[in-house]
Image 1 (cartoon, chains in turn red, cyan):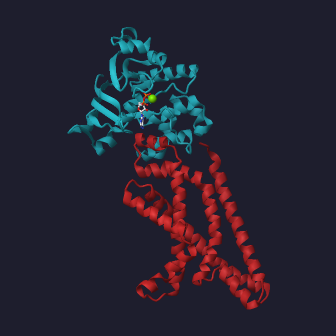
Image 2 (cartoon, chains in turn blue, purple):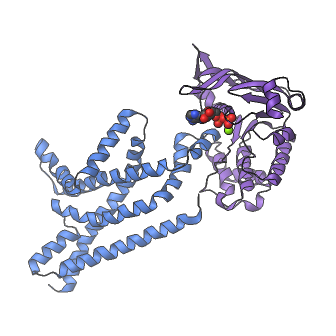
Image 3 (cartoon, chains in turn orange, red):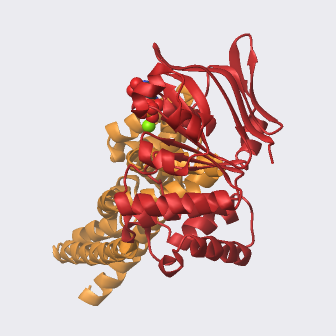
Amino acid sequence: MDIFTILVLLLKGFLVTLLIFAGTLIGSLPLGIVVGLMRLSRLKLVSGVARVFISIMRGTPLMLQLLAIFFGPYFLFGIRLSSEWKIAACLLAFILNYSAYFAEIYRSGLQSIPKGQTEACKVLGYTKSQTFFQILLPQVIKRILPAMANEIITLVKDTSLAFVIGISELMSQAKAISAAEVSMIPFALAALIYWVFNTVVERVLNQIETRMGYYHE
Amino acid sequence: MNNVLLKLSAANKSFGNNHILKDIDLEIHEGKVNVLIGPSGAGKSTLLRALSLLESFESGELSYKDIKVCTNVDGKAIYDEQAVQKSKEIFGLVFQQFNLFPHLSALENITNPLCVVKKMDKDVAKQKALCVLDKLQLLSKKDFYPWQLSGGQRQRLAIARALAMEPEILYFDEPTSALDKQLVTDLSKTIKDLAQDNLTMLIVTHDLDFAREVADQVYYMEAGRIIEEGTSSEIFERPKQSLTQAFIS
Ligand SMILES: Nc1ncnc2c1ncn2[C@@H]1O[C@H](COP(=O)(O)OP(=O)(O)O)[C@@H](O)[C@H]1O
Ligand SMILES: [Mg+2]
């Protein structure tokens, strides 16, 4: 195999990596808000459920969660696993896991907004959801952006865990080619692709941070 | 001219074991500058916050015009959620810390509540906002963010935001606390202008010079009770209660 063929195979794997990355963000950024708000709920049951969920998701390895969700239907109900289920299970595991981390970030961000903001909204007659979406969330996003950026960069690297359930993303591709060719080059190229991608992600996040810099507290 | 805007009777409020508001009766009529004075810790802010429905009374009855916001049932104040919502159209509040929205420009600080709460059309809201900004000499600052404004300008923006909602009574909590002497003079003028336009106000302050300057009607509060009430000259020149005499001298 020449290096060009290797690169094409790796980039195919990277597309799957990209799918996991984007799918996870699209799912977990909003789900994190829901879990974070549940965690702050005054209803003990609701906040309790969120607390337990966050604790389990953050307290056990993502690799184990991937395996549990992927094999769960088979071991629990004897359902045969289709190949679509593989990518669905992968996305589900990543989304659930990351929503727990994001929930904690949203929660601390929300709690850091001065009470006076909510009070001003109350007096002006905003409903709770108007207060949240019009006034609180835009300010929360600015405050949590650095913490979010950390998680998002970690996610780029975490996508490689999908190899444990046999998804042919960048990491599995590199491993397979490396074994077949008895060469380290696929790994070096994979590392390069991860690094370039992360650099781009970082750039984009910095851009957003700059754009939110139009106001101070 | 003499309609009752706000009527509060036998209102009580505690924080834990701390009885803060004790059997407060208050009736505010249309078209006057009402000033609530009293020493620090008297419960003035708590009363204003409860009137603004940010805190709830434990017992007592509160109504805005014909809207019964809370009524006493078995010695406990029961709030009517619909009435609470409706009464928010009647009062506005200028917070001591202003509580402007930092992510919105001066103009947007005013248009956002108009569009979101009053469902006003964007262009109509903008016209309205420009009009109140002009009234408070902030027109040239319309695209500034709160952090770019001085203390006095921030306060005027907070007043403008409240005014744009067209309240019938406007509350102020310690409006002079963050201002230097010149700005207090400007604020007095602003308040008199608003009174000229027939806006009713209730101002909480411990600044007696300022109170003398703007007040028509004065309430003296100490240790959770309204001890004396009267016109500005009655309270400042011929106070009847010894506690009031001691405070104003
Ligand atoms: N949220 C609160 N929790 C507990 N105590 C409070 C709270 N708000 C005010 N108080 C107490 O109520 C009393 C009256 O406070 P406040 O209404 O702010 O007085 P004033 O505005 O007249 O200075 C004070 O003793 C204060 O410590
Ligand atoms: Mg006070």
